Length: 211
Ligand code: C5P
Image 1 (tube, rainbow, N blue to C red):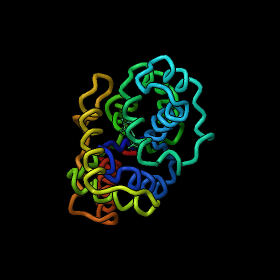
Image 2 (image 1 turned 60 degrees about the vertical axis):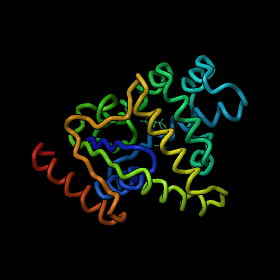
Image 3 (image 1 turned 90 degrees about the vertical axis):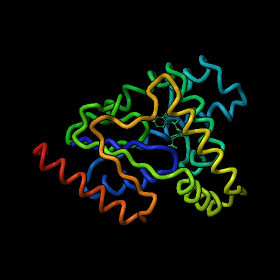
Image 4 (image 1 turned 120 degrees about the horizontal axis):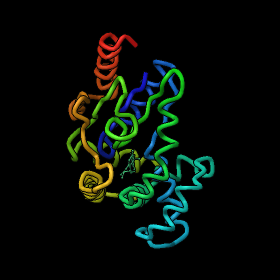
């Protein structure tokens, strides 16, 4: 069974994907980490984030093990990831790795922006997780403050709006709901409630598809 979980920044899709993967004993890939790693490497090199050939070279030889999750989740890396993710050649360089992960025997859970539309259009389960920008900014703010970063709600909200606009507006694999995805709006739900709704969606699809 392939479970595709897409949605905008800080929608809670990562938490949900990890939990579903654990429940169904499936391997999980947070595909945002791939783009974050490319963005982090380009930031560390001090180069121009719009430099296509430099970003593609990083994507082609990417080794996620060289990055800590801590470093990849830092505030500025999200913005850098969204810049390099808009480069079609960077997306192509990361395509096979994601498709191979999705198609492994037994299935997998992947979360990102284009899993249900591009990476695994044949996924048995597609969930589009979303919430209002304000609710997402509130959650991301708490995460960043817990990590010791100095940020304000307004900064986080502006970052989220900018990333939403870039991710949804780009030509290559834009953030959008697959026509056959089920929308899970968790603006008014806590993590446990969100998870219960997601499990119900998975179970319904398992019954429908016989997986
Ligand atoms: O999900 P996360 O916020 O970690 O993703 C960071 C950035 O990586 C996103 O803003 C988006 O631009 C990009 N991304 C993408 N496609 C994916 C996953 C992430 O374009 N499948």
